[in-house]
Image 1 (cartoon, one colour):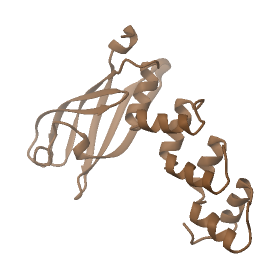
Image 2 (tube, one colour; image 1 turned 45 degrees about the horizontal axis):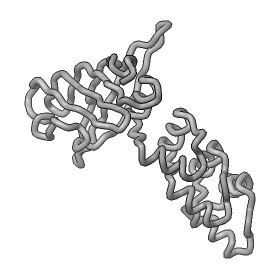
Image 3 (tube, one colour; image 1 turned 120 degrees about the vertical axis):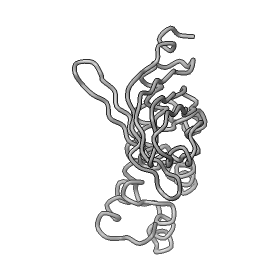
Image 4 (cartoon, one colour; image 1 turned 135 degrees about the vertical axis):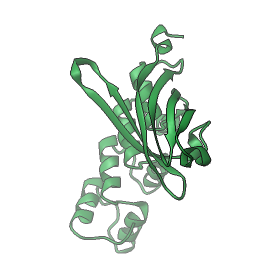
Length: 203
């Protein structure tokens, strides 16, 4: 194992709320070099927090230890939970992968695993950076979405343009509807323009 991977990345965590369908609002904070700070927020299923139950979370304050297991590594949490909230410290131990612990930490908190990365590799995006992968995840650009675009003739669209298409609601259904209207093979950038200028309701 790379010696860097054996040194945990540490910080603090808080749970701000839990919904009726057991979604937990989790916030991670870390100090970074040069006085910078990291703040990450996510809504995560309670079932992904191994070792923490809904009963524990809703009971009076008590010590708690739980983990999030990712392909990129393990986030271990230690602290207090109760009455739907919690706080404490976390440590991320990176997996033995050919990437920096910081990159693996980023992949872990965005739940970007080997299947997601491998699928985009297979689609020809093996040059995607960690930042690219995060953008794809945040904008719900899935391998299935890219495959459907390919089936409609949109081959090897650049990653930023894939994000733009998804962000503006350009879906395979929208493209097929345009074809039915006689507008076939509309360039990807013009698809976005059509959505921006009012062709809506076809998501």
